Image 1 (cartoon, rainbow, N blue to C red):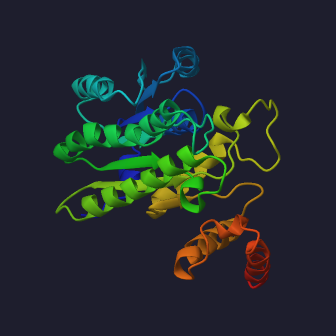
Image 2 (cartoon, rainbow, N blue to C red):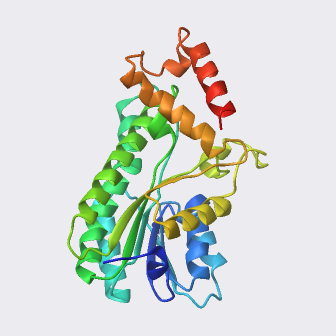
Length: 286
C-alpha cells in the first residue's frame, strides 16, 4: 500500500516528539502544528517544556506537554496510554531526545550508561512502546529517529556519543526493514542525520549562532522536504558542509574497512595526507 508523508502530516493527525521542548524537537512541533496536527511534547526539562507550551497558546491545534525521561520505559508507557486514550491514534513518533555531555573511553561508567540510556534506549523504548499501537491502528504513520553524522564517521573525542548514535542508526535501519516487510503496513521509519545545528546541545556556551550552522527550523524544513520524497537517510547539509563533502567523508570511513586501513585513518598520522588528497580530488571531480 503506497503511503506518503503528506498522508501522515495531515490536519487532525497526532505527533509525539521527545526532546520536544527545544532545538530540533521544538522546531518539528512548530512545523507539525502549522500543518494542523495535534502535538505531544515530551521532555525532562520542565521549565523549558513550559516555555515551549506557552509558544503554542492560541493555536487551533491541541498541544500537550508532558515531563518525562525517555530512559524510563514506564513513563513512556504511561504517555502512550494517555495519548491513545485522548486521540485514539499516533501518526508521527519522533524519537528526538538526546544528550551530549562529552565522554572519554574511560569516563565513569555512570556517564556511559546515561548517554546510552537517553540516546539509544530512548529510541528503543519509544519504538517498542508506541509502534505496536501505531501498527494496530492501521493508519499511516512515520517514525523519525534522530541520529548523527558522528554515528557514521565516528570521529575521535566523544566515544560514548558516537556509540549511541551508531547504534541508533543500526536500530532504525532494522526497524525500516521490518516495517517494509509487513503486508499492508502503512508505517515507515526514517533516520534524521542533522548537520551543524545551533541548539542548546551544540551551543557550548556560545550565545550567537555560528555562520556555519543551520537553525533548527531550517533543519526541520529540509527533513519535511526529504520525507515527502520518501528518503530513509535524511542527511542534512548546513552552511559549511555540503552533501558532497559528507559523502566523501563517509566513503573514506567505509574505506578503512574495505582497504584494511587503521580505524579512523582520517585522523591517523600515516593516512591524514592521503585523506586530504582523496578529498581534494573527489570534490574537484564533482
